[in-house]
Each structure stands twice: as C-alpha cells, then as structure tokens.
Amino acid sequence: MSTMAKFCLAGSVAVSAGIVFYVHFRQEVERSQLHEGVIKDLERQRMRQIENITVLQKQRDLEKQLSQND
Image (cartoon, rainbow, N blue to C red; front, side, top):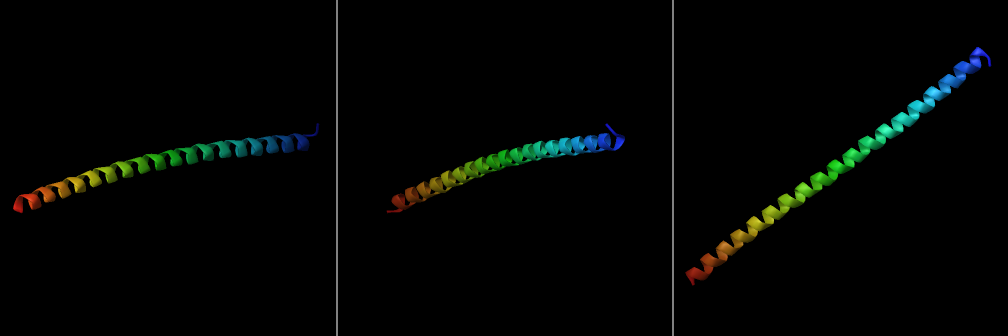
C-alpha cells in the first residue's frame, strides 16, 4: 500500500471517528436538555399548584368573612 493511500485511509478513519464522536456528544447534550425541560415543567406545575391552593384558601377565608357579616 502506498504512503498516499495510507494517509487517505487514516484521514477517512479519523474523520469518521470524529463524526461518530460528535453525533454521540450531541445526543447526550440534547438528552440532558430534554431532561432539564421536564424538570422545569414539573417545577412550574408545582408552583402553579401552590398558587392555586393559596388562591383557594383566600377564597374560603373571604367566604367565611362574608357569611359572618350576614
């Protein structure tokens, strides 16, 4: 095998390995970003639920005040 053929083979192997590494790296990054999105959504849901409970409690307190004033 000639020297030029060896360089071409080594270059194509290196480029292929680089592409495979990059694709796997990007998959891991995207997977972690998706996971962070799920965590943020769960946190937003929890905060909304706390806010709804607070509003509901305020409404109950106002209803009690209204019924006491009648």
